[in-house]
Image 1 (cartoon, rainbow, N blue to C red):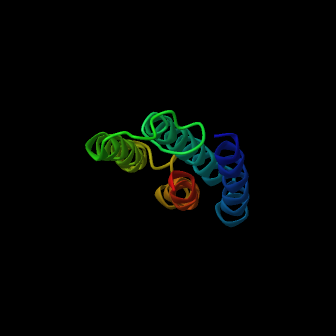
Image 2 (cartoon, one colour):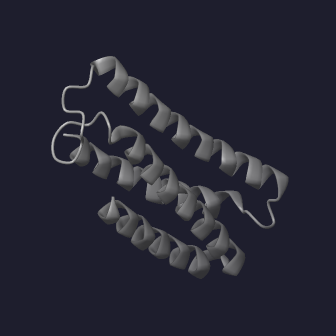
Image 3 (tube, helix red, strand yellow):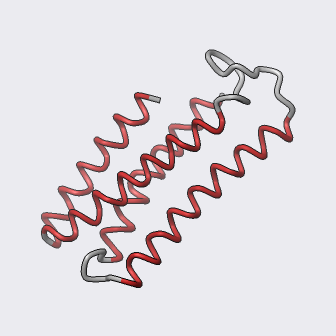
Length: 122
């Protein structure tokens, strides 16, 4: 989980820096906040998968497929809640959470980490 957290922090810093250069300080704060949320969600989703993931440190190598899918679906539900959080924050206070930088921070971190997760599940 440490490589995932470090990758999330690095991606968040890059995206926040780009948001600052393009749109200013408030955009960078929004991008950083949602990049941190994406990293936390991804770590939570990986934590859900840990008991049913096979291989090293997984603990449940022979877990039934239904249990695996249920936990994977719960992780996807967490990710969907993150998307809803962007819509709520940008809808309620677009001055503090500009929609484009907030979405860029969230998706710019979550999507690469999601592709990285596929390598971890194998």
